Length: 124
Image (tube, rainbow, N blue to C red; front, side):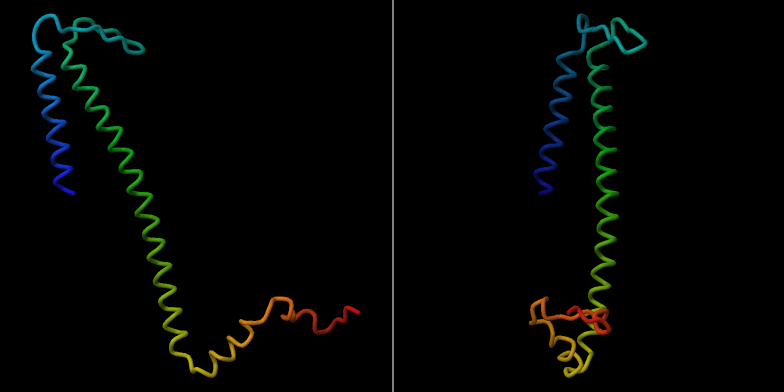
């Protein structure tokens, strides 16, 4: 996988350098109109460089936000796994008879279960 990433990075660098060589020299100036300011005669390579830097900053900020979200989720899942492992350990250390008593009602349908609140009342 690292070979693919290195190849892609090398390809991007070669493209940027090739673009820079082809656009250096007189006649390659452009006018840049920003929201509040206008610049005239700016070299094309300068515009491309700052656009590249801006794209890197935006992608880095997106990567950092996704990384933080995933690390928070991972920490939450690790806590949950630890809690479940401790629960399994506790259940594993119980005597078989006690566990069998707890599981006797597991195969009954829900309609056969009685609520503890229905003991004192009669429904007809």
